[in-house]
Every structure is written in structure tokens, then in C-alpha cells.
Amino acid sequence: MRILVRTKLYRAFPELDSYSDEQCERFVRAATRAWWRRILRGVIVLLVFIAGLPVALAAMAWTYAVTEQALDLPGVLVLFVVIPIGLMLVGVGTPPVAAFLARDQLLRRQVRFVLRDRGACAECRYSLIGLPVTRAHVLCPECGTRTRVDPSLGELTPDDAGRGVVARAPPAS
Image (cartoon, rainbow, N blue to C red; front, side, top):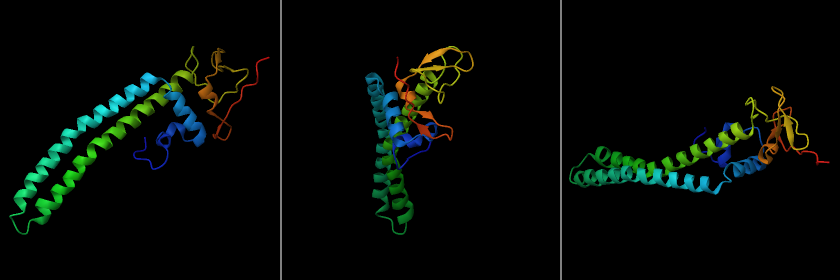
């Protein structure tokens, strides 16, 4: 996983590299559709953030104590002021960075689950992503099982060049 992406969050996941932004947005929406998963992810991220607060508070308290003592001593600016301020910044930055990493890891896990669960044959677990869709079904080339296509996977069918294309199943007759 790429850490601290500057673009869209789904660009942190190599599994979605070959798809367009619009397709990735729809797929991530499909992966996070369940309301209970969104709530659980939010609670976990909040708990990780709260767990990082003691680190930040300890770093700030130590920095305050050391800096208070250092003000009486000349010539120790770097040792007793600059380094503690750097440690304080690390301490303050720890909770949000930990929360972002937890959020990204949970979302990546959901995306992988959807790809593995919905994108594979129920009988033999062969990946069905990229196979031709006929009447909202895909025929497994390994075991011959006919599987109904999940709409989010239909949006993520790669073409021959590996680019993501929207697969449209023909209307049922």
C-alpha cells in the first residue's frame, strides 16, 4: 500500500491501478456500502486516534519539562529546545497518522474481500474478473459453473490491454 497519497484514496491500492477514477470510486462505494462496516471502520479509526493521544501528551509534557529547565542554561539550544520540539511534533503527529493508516488498511481489506469474495467462482475460487459477461452471468473457465455478475465487478472488467472498462451485460430476453 502506498502511504500518504496526494490524490484520491483509492489510488493507494495497487489492486485498483488499472481502472479509471470513476470506476474506482464506484467500486470503493460498493465495497463500503454496508452501513455497519462504515460505522465499525469509523469506530476503529477513532479508537486508534484516541490510543495515540497518550503518546502525544507524554511527548508534550516531556518537552515542556526539558524546555523549562533549558531556559536557564546557555549554549544548549539544540539539545534542550530543538530536539524536544521535534519530538513534540512527532508526538502530535502520531495520532492522526496512525488513524489514517488504520483507515487505509481497513478500506484495503474491504476492497480485497470484495475482489476475492465477489470476483471468484463459488465452486473453485477461480477469479472471474475480466471474463466476458453474457446476460448478467459469467461462465467459469475452470469448472463451468455459471455465476451471476455483481454490479460492482461489472464496472471493473479490464479490457485486453489491462485498462478498466465498463462491462455492460446484454439485456435479458
